[in-house]
Length: 148
Image 1 (cartoon, rainbow, N blue to C red):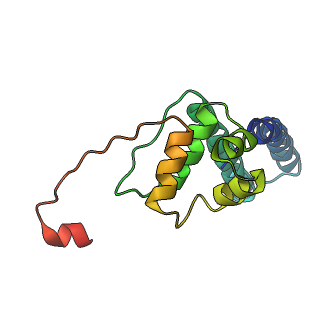
Image 2 (image 1 turned 60 degrees about the vertical axis):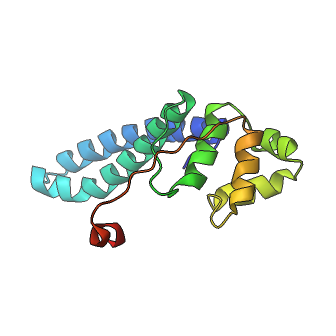
């Protein structure tokens, strides 16, 4: 996950470089006389990496526009907290100041996507980010479906 503008700029630059390398590599393989199916087998892992990086860049751009994914039973809360910070244009340092903690604490927490935080801590983060989180309760009719 891209967590700040510097990482975004680096990823965007790397994406452009990787795209160019991919084009050049395909051309070299074609010149070497490989068939299209052989080129595809060689290039597929590179394209997979390229697509993953592209998705990360697009995801960051989506967050900057304030577009968030829905939570399901609080799964993804840590990711949402990071996303909100990014969408607001706050640095980890800015958030640390609001929370009255050291920047390294926010960095560590985000690296772990706030795994295992308490509800009180989540509320404190939401308050520091000036966010009101609303919930919708949906009761699952089939108990077995709820367990699965």
